[in-house]
Image (cartoon, rainbow, N blue to C red; front, side):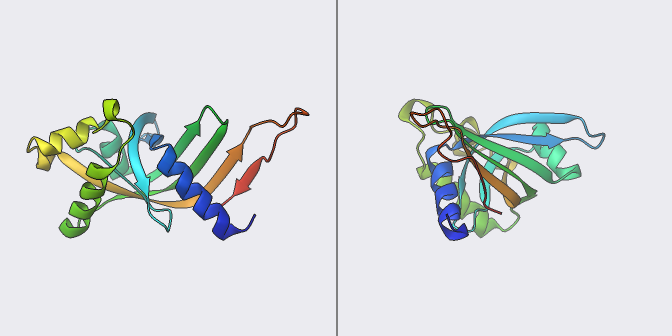
Length: 158
């Protein structure tokens, strides 16, 4: 499988599994993991929102290096990445990303996320839009064939 095809597959995987586990660390290196709801662009930049008072946001300010994992339990497929997170400061870009997040659906019961609900209620100064630029990304498939072997294993995308 070529890199272009893998990138397309990774973007589609994120579109179908929008909740990821984001790992950050504070200035002392203490780890923290939180779920974020996000989307990926064609270049595999990943966008999500969070409260500016959240632990993940404060960690990103002092250590922008993050890890993010998506998981499809039904098909035993995961996507892991490491990268750098930055706050989107451009107001036009921020609004464009928020608009896209408003139109995405996980399912009717679980969307919109609490941060989007905060934004809709007027708490705009409490929300940050973040962009993760991956520096490495791996798609792993642990689904087995009838003979018990894995269909495929690790695919390095970036």
